[in-house]
Length: 59
Image 1 (cartoon, rainbow, N blue to C red):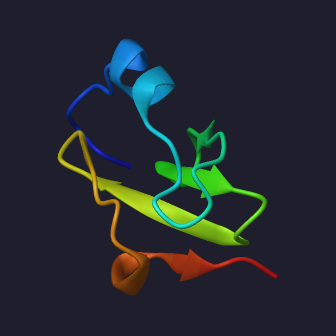
Image 2: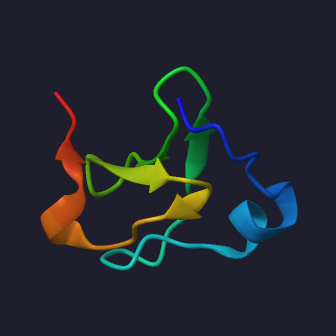
């Protein structure tokens, strides 16, 4: 989990770069989830990494 707090307002403004859909925040894994794309984008040091190449595929 990231040591840097995540800015909730920033998270609300972000969308999935592939689907432009809504993201949900998974606090336990510290990542943003796009259910439509089946991807989880990591958050590192409080910064969302919104690159498909860095995303984890969801089951």
